[in-house]
Image: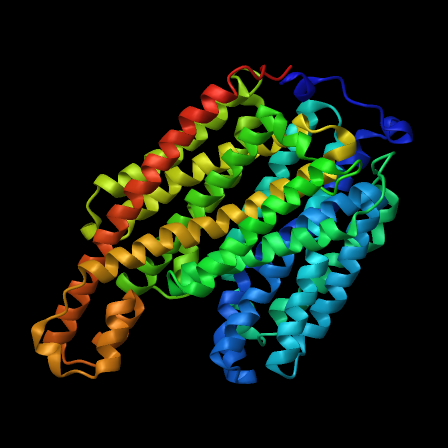
Amino acid sequence: MTTSLHAAPQSRGPAAARAPWRDWLALGLLMFPVLLVAVDNTALTFALPAIAQSLDPTGVQLLWIVDAYPLVLAGLLVCMGSLGDRIGRRRLLLIGSMGFAALSAATAFAPTAEWLIAGRAARGFFGAMLMPSTLSLIRNIFAEPNRRRLAVAIWAAGFSGGAALGPIFGGWLVEHYWWGAVFLVAVPLMLPLIALGPALIPESKNPEPGRVDIPSIGLSLLVMVPLVYGIKELATAGPSAAALGSMALGLATAVVFVRRQLTLKHPLLDMSLFRNRVFSMAITANILALFSFNGFILFLAQHLQLLEGMTPSAAGVAMIPALAATVIAGLVVVPLVRKVRPGFVVGAGLAFSAAGYSLVTFGNHDGGPSLLLAALLILALGVGTAETISNDLILGAAPAHKSGAAAAISETGYEVGALLGTAVLGSILTASYQHNLRLPEELAGAAEGARHSAGETLAGAMDLAAGLPAPAADAVRQAAAAAFDSGVHVTAAIGLILMATAAVCAAVVLRKVPKAA
């Protein structure tokens, strides 16, 4: 099962004679869309208040402004990865870059909420062409395993660095310009890739691609869109008929999709990739690493802003050391796998995530944010370690001509892991908060809506406290903090068990993968 991971690299034809500096310049160009997508994922949050004031969207429209992009993106990742294998990954990347830049410019000047929603959805269509293309091109540009591993580490570092810059960069743009600048920044970031990509990035594709199966494309959309929508609904509104029904539709369609792929001569998604234990376990490790990271960020962001009183930008700055640790860890483990088997490195990364959660589970949160930030730092070291090596294992385990499909699966894992972390841990945190909240009895005369809002979320409780005199306000804040803290302990304990189990599984399943040469 592991032989394909370290097999001799396939010839790239004319590209094999390329000077090494051209390969690294190509990687530099590929980092532009990586940084852009990572920044774009987190920067929008800081533009929402300005968008709400400027366009006056309804509550439903504001939700769709946020959700339109990830829904379309997640639904098309597998399709676009397979399409890149067929028509050429560089070609698909350049098409996506031009479309993304043009739509970003149009979206930046959206005059209505409907225009903005449509623009976000269209950006998701072209955004789905970007990330699988970058990772699959890295697989083909850097055929030698050690160089590829370093390139993947840089790719992952760019993604983590962009996520770290997003809150700060987005807040700065909105503060100094207007909300449209968050979208407009895509244009200058894409120009170097569009101008220099055709000369510096070698084309690659599957030499025997086969026909595109249109029904499979439709089925893939019917799998991912309802599933992602259901997860997001579960995260924001809790269990409901809409959320559970949507997820059930996605899972049922997934069964139909898989059965169809198994019968096709040229499937949209080659299910044989999952028969490789290295590939499947690396995907699982990737999903769980993102699950743990995003779930942790969810309650840490609320703690810093609502309980510690930090502004969103200040909270983002407080997280920078941990996010920088993700980048550093990803780069440091590249030479480490020459001395230690990759499976043990991935297992150790997940064990670090478990250690971060254990610090929260058994620690005292009354001493300010230092404990949670220290836990995030430990968690980030683990995520950076596990992500880099698991992505390299994913690419190395897949044949070169299927690298687009493999990269798309990896990217889908990113999306699903992030959403599951938010939905599952977020739902548990919310349920625990609601169950443990005990508001002071003297608030019986407060407005029903305010008391209901306080009972639903920590933010609602802080809003209620803001309108009360000092003694009552302090009592509400203490009660809400105690309920939230109890929820964090429960959530962290679940994260600890899950990550510890994943660490053991990764070490066992991947133990036979040999050390890098």
